[in-house]
Length: 316
Image (cartoon, rainbow, N blue to C red; front, side, top):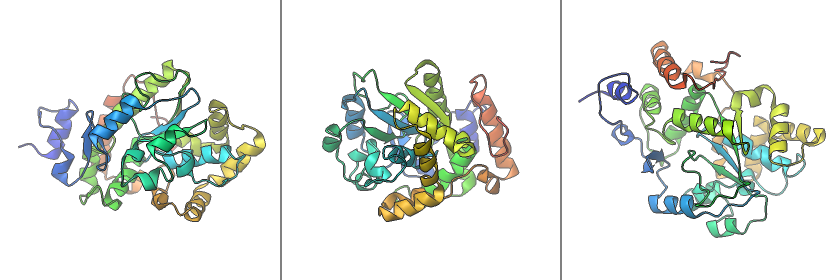
C-alpha cells in the first residue's frame, strides 16, 4: 500500500500510484457530493436539489470563494456598501447568507441566520449569497437568470491551506486531529473541504475571462489597496461607489472592526476571523513542504495566466 505522499504524487501525475486519497483515512470527516468533498453536514439529496432547482434572479449576486479565501470580509464589504458604509441592522450572515448552508440543520442557524430556503426565495432584491461552489456546482438552477453575477475572490494557496488547517482542527464536525504536513498533502490532492484548490480557482478564472458577469478578485490585491477593491465591488454590484461610501466601507471592514461587529451581532461564525493577512504561511511551512508545494503549484498553474502574491510582493 502506498503512503500518502505517493498517493498524492500519483493522483497529480507525478508518480505511479493509482490509489485514491481518502480524507477519512486521515481522520478528516467530509461529505463527497458530485465528486467534490464538502462540509460533512451537507446531505447529497438536499445539495443536489438546491443546485438543480434554485430559482435565480437577474439582480442576484453570489460571493463565491474557495474556503478560507476572504469570504467573510467580502460579505462584510457588501453589507456595508448596502448601508452607505455603515453596519446597518443586519450582520453579514443575515445580509449575505451562505445559500448551501441553508440546507443544513447544523450550519443554517450559524451561516444563514434568520433564513430558510423558503424565506430566501421571497427576499427583496438585490439578493447577495455566500457560496463556496465550484463552477459546475453553483446553485443557479436549470435555467439561470441571464443577469446573475458572481463576485469571485481567490487567495494564494499557501495562506489558504494554513487557514483551512486551523479551520479543520477547530471545528468539531471535521474531526481532524492530524498534523500540518499531512493536511498540506491532502490539500494538494484535493482531498479536503471544497476539493482541489487548483480546479476550483482555475475554473472560475477561466469563466471570468469569457463572462463579464463574473468579477475575479485576488485577496492579496484587496489587502494591498482596499479602497480600489471596494470601489470595483461597488461598481460591479451596482451599489453606492461614492468616495464617502467607499472610504467608510474600508474603515468599517478592517479586521478589528469586523471582530467588533461579529461580537456585537452575536454571530457564532465570529471564529471565522482568525488572522487574515498575507504571507503568514512562512511560519508553518518547512523547507521540504514548501518545495513539494512549489513543484505542484508550478505544474498546475502552467499556461493559466493566473499568478498570486505569496506575501513578498512578487507575482508567481
